[in-house]
View 1 (cartoon, helix red, strand yellow):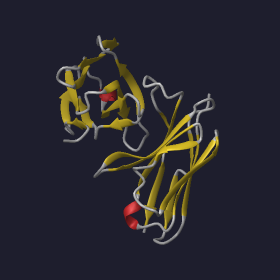
View 2 (cartoon, one colour):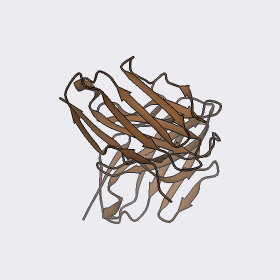
View 3 (cartoon, chains in turn red, purple):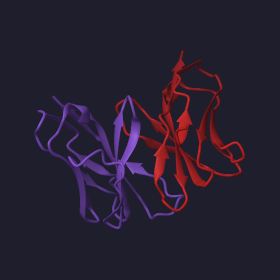
Length: 110
Length: 115
């Protein structure tokens, strides 16, 4: 089993739709979690951290389920500009080595 | 503030040549990472420095790859000799501290093509 797994997609949704991605991780000692966004031919950029109690930033909501070892990202009212690849990042305590998932591709169409 | 700066942005070279990629982390950041990204394998960690010291180089593919960080503001990744399978985008990233809540900040990447 890979350390961090994501459904590659693509998720093809119309503008205004709500879409959710999951990311599973294998190491129960994982401590920190992030979602990054990567546009085509660009570098990954931090979208948001994921806190234990869940957190929201505008149209984006991130949640952590430690029991089932996954994190999720929910995007409400999708915009064309949300089209990108969304990468989850898991950091295991002690080593501090960020491990990236392969990413989930989102395409928002008119 | 300037972000992580990488050079060159693009590099095209012939098999067998030496390639040197450069990175300037964000001032004050004390951890630096080199990643390689390909369609097949995604983002792979090559090596990680903390306070200029290599901490984990288990991701370096083979002896042809080497990385240095002579000071807090500069790092290099060298491939000698280069091979076509080294073609990828190489990203450098830095972070403040080793606390697990510190996110990575990426440079623009170097797109390497080895013919």
